[in-house]
Image 1 (cartoon, each protein chain N blue to C red):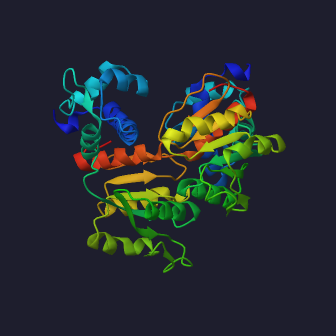
Image 2: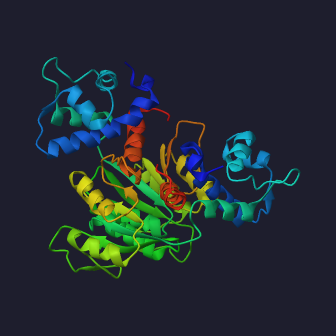
Image 3: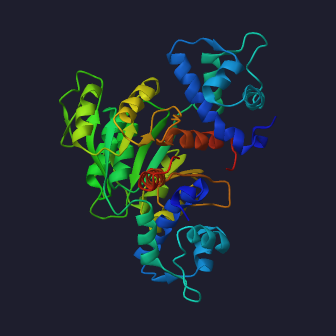
Length: 211
Length: 211
């Protein structure tokens, strides 16, 4: 099956498989049946088999799945064979927080640059990176393969910042601005609204509602 | 209508109204019709009217909504009239990151304590808070009204940490551990998996798929 034809619902579930298999691997579990995995993950065994069949299966009748191998394969499907360079637009609290987090974590995702429009921040060094202006980004993008643009700017600046990235060929946006962005072309966007989930908790606390 | 009867779908959308109204307010917009709001938010005007009617309406025929008032009302519905105390279980990178973030931001959500099982961290002061052991939490919870427990522990420790909170009367869990938690009783849980969205971006980059 062509990878382009795989449904968003399946793609949506892949990271979850990756997480659970990582935990099983850490716990020393070497193989697992789709039935056992289904119990742990709270989905049907048939959905697991269907999902994984999109990529060729990986299971063996009567043996189940090899945990480490399956995790590696799913990681590889999701692009974890190589590193991905990211640049953060918005060198405020949350932008710095993310830069620090990724510089301390050993993942395939590397923050290699920070952008801010504030002249006072220009040239400031954050986690070893000199803050640049949006005007500096095209040059930076020519010299570095920037795959993911992270938006931590105020919402009214988000579209402009997104366009700065997209014009320079960045094909994926991780959006933390408080607005839902959408691009009609070949750009992938994930809108993350951390506060929304916190507000739902506070709604439930206030209204005494079980989620 | 009894607040307990309001559907989760409506509650899910409330924070989004709150965000968009906040932006409109910042931009100086004083009132807005459901039609205009529907264009900005990408939902139908009838859904907006239905959603808000759950709480008594707030709109006026021919006038629309008063932006500031509506935002305050929705904030109040979501419990933003008062502060909410939170304690973080897990004083690793991400836990510290969140503690720092909330201590710097002026929100209704206050981090007032940090828990870790690591004896080396016991007594260390993070953002003015002394790291405590899980055993210390019941006493702490008696003296402080802890409403929200934040989990930033490894997934195999998440259930234990969640139970530490729940046993002491914490009714809401904001879960960043890489596992989906569910409690059958009157505890609200929001599972946040930041990496899942990043992995979806990297999937799309790798497989050249438009989201």
